[in-house]
Length: 570
Image (cartoon, rainbow, N blue to C red; front, side, top):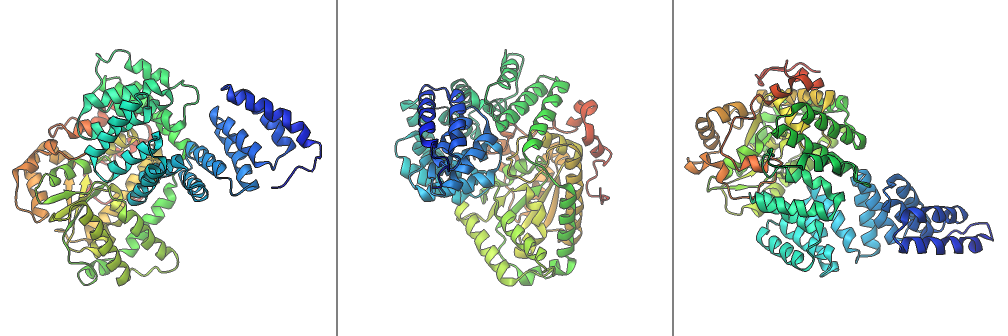
């Protein structure tokens, strides 16, 4: 460890550290910052001082200052596990998910017993779609943490990720019996209950979580989605507005509260107030993540150029003959969940929910083109490995099913590659009126790790690139493999559309497919409550309620509702 060149520093530092320790012990981190900062000036390369200063900054919500101090700490002592761990917390709070995962990984390599670091890393990689890696992290948290809170939470989250939901509920209830004030356990249990349609119990869990931990006020987002908010929910809107002023509230929680207030105001018919908060949420999101619409447009061009009619025509000789996969894709909020609920009601179908598989394999293939290999042809070994690995994932989900769904919306990027890998797979493209889709996206929480805009001109441009790409798929993929379902048609006359979907999947008709609201499986979409209702049409032309406040999204009204027409580049 490097030392200060000032020989008097240790004598000057000692009383400062003694004072800081006393203040920290008394629960006064804000007051401890000044003596710690003075000590750090005297001994800038002392990792312990920098760590303690970073910790004090973290506790008072001065996250950028905390990160700077903790980076000094790990630079001074790269083997300082606690400093890496708390640096991870700081980066996570700031929305730097990749940096946080790296910091947690270093912390656990240095000290494998750091339970909370395992748990936090698991939560982040799960949100990014790396299910198996997340389960591994949660299992390590459970193994290292034993009967501690994060150990039990790790066990519960591993069980949830593995779809052992009853066991997870049992673990959480046992945990809350021992520690009724654990807000994270209430939040986890609330999400589990709401996924299975147990909305009244879920609401109670979310209310308890918020009451016990005001910094978890983002739980309001899940609470208001348990059912429509009514005038009987006295004071709920005011409580959520007051929660925005909670000291130390993180941006991610503030974003979710704005969306919760917007949803409640929408339920109550106050669309001006609703849009005010949806716009505010988008502003918070832009503060932590940006989206390059021009770059996405260029990537769309490259995908179209690589997936030529010649490549698609070679699919039968290049790809697998397995017909198991049913890909349900389209823009988020376009009806993909409803279609999966319909298809997975069939007794021969397993539901895979949103799998991140093709986002990873497709991106690897796409990068190979960027490295100078712009040939449209795909290496046979790449296709064979991708097909085998994907079938392995699907068989883990439903070992004996004739068909298994994957409703990752962003697979619209990889439809051509997927068809080449699985020429007998069915790809169901869900379409919905552009402005209704964009408005619903604007009102929904998406993980910050997603490269995806949620409002403004960027969302308009993204939608137009998506339409250009899917128009290409429509022109090059076989019509019996790439079928399209319009949300408006499906909700207007469900049975004929549902019969067409089931027939396209090569399945015998089953009446259960007409009752998607009866599907017993977990629903992990933001529209958990709506998914449990019979098919309805109240979301058609919702944009008209928001017409005065659409802003840049108004451009999508002029795009019209006939979505299979070619779209000019924006």
